[in-house]
Length: 269
Ligand SMILES: Nc1ncnc2c1ncn2[C@@H]1O[C@H](COP(=O)(O)OP(=O)(O)OP(=O)(O)O)[C@@H](O)[C@H]1O
Image 1 (cartoon, protein in one colour):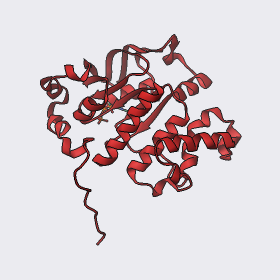
Image 2 (cartoon, rainbow, N blue to C red; image 1 turned 90 degrees about the vertical axis):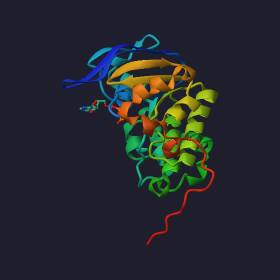
Image 3 (cartoon, protein in one colour; image 1 turned 60 degrees about the vertical axis):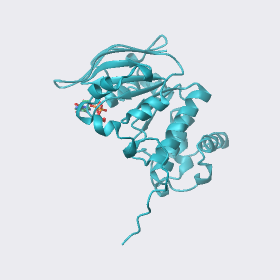
Image 4 (cartoon, helix red, strand yellow; image 1 turned 180 degrees about the vertical axis):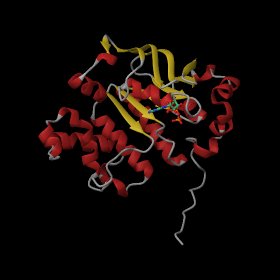
């Protein structure tokens, strides 16, 4: 169980996360929605301690996450893998090495600097890639992959950490609908098959509704909705998104619906 109590993060006078309380049982798939600047990314970054809370508590079981330091903090960051909108792969490195960096917390410094990994670690990385349908790209440089493929590699890298929680910060915001669906299906499979808790910031409402057991709505740093998708009325969703409601409701733009025809190919001039 992940529990946050009165969690607050200030940037100067700005309350990015304001007195948030949540209990997330193991194995849930949670979508966080809200307009730009609502505090979604800050909440995720607090959870894996990329940033520190100004006030409040983060508890995982009996562990006080906000108090962790040094090796224990590194172990928590590894337990709590994160994927990002922009994938954050090292473009000039091959795919399998990118995935292996997911295990660096567990590898002595000299081996990580020299990028020396054991056959067992390599086999584990290939297995993670295979789950995402990406094993055939193992020796390709990451920068040669499409955005959708890069995000699948980023998920494989997260899996290589053997996390308990997977945090995803707008994982499909840069992807076309077909790739968005592949990535969301992969996150759901990992959640269902491995029992890993998935907490995912999502901009489009229909994606949150289609994939998540639970939706959390944020507005100006506060949690203003917390419930199952069927409890989120259109009126409530419109209030959460405010001026961005039309964009968030616009399924054609970034939703996970499969397009009926292939996207047009742009021919270079
Ligand atoms: N490092 C920072 N320094 C100063 N202010 C910050 C910082 N990070 C976030 N903020 C502010 O905190 C608030 C919440 O930002 P956050 O990125 O968490 O929102 P968000 O809901 O994830 O938005 P988006 O969907 O645009 O990513 C915003 O007002 C933002 O400007």
